[in-house]
Image 1 (cartoon, rainbow, N blue to C red):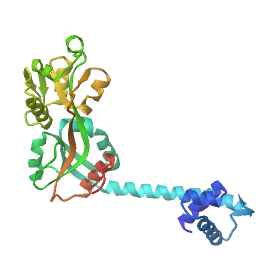
Image 2 (image 1 turned 90 degrees about the horizontal axis):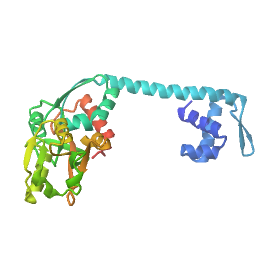
Image 3 (image 1 turned 30 degrees about the horizontal axis):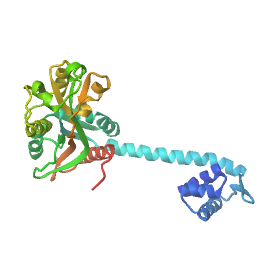
Image 4 (image 1 turned 60 degrees about the vertical axis):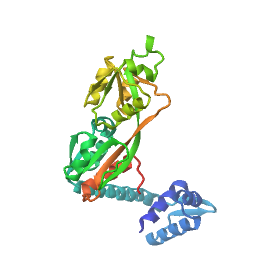
Length: 300
């Protein structure tokens, strides 16, 4: 017996209609009728009583329906088990570099999905800065890197965009009270900007924007840590500039407020990078496929 015949039988038994079953199975009605006829010949029994256009399960048909459901369920279970065994056979170590914002805010759920599907793969995660990653990749110190950056133009590195991330200016929850109720970019001349390290891509974006407007903040503070920047801004010591995704909880709970940038919308690319000559091991291939599926990246 072929499984497709059993599946068609179950569908006909549940609908008691060849035409309805054909529509559900995306077959023609004659095809479904022929499948049931073939199944009855294989079993040497009658599964349906045909009373005009009405169908009714025979006693034999009722018994076979119960077994058919068990057969299909067992088949599906065996396929799932085999898939699990395939995943468990994928093992080894992966060395991954990512920025703090990617590690804490962008990738945890994706990595959780990967771990649940590939429990035998060990992920060695190194938090670092985007400008170091091309060197690490070239020296084969890491297998893959996750970054927030503009278009990559490094030799022998393939970049794949996962999403576009919005960047925003933000201040403490009390900032827009009183004299700051109508914030303008000019206000930054009397404020402290709290930014990431000098080589940070999005730090350079806001600095270039302000330079083009001939605006210079009263002072600047620099931090490596996103959480440090958020903490100082929440305490009212200045205005920060970070990916909006890192501020979701703070904005939702009202601990900080987003400030308008008026004519300018800042975005940056969330990407993963691998060396063009990198051997893609089964473990690395599994991770790439998980990332592509999670972020719905179309294959090129």
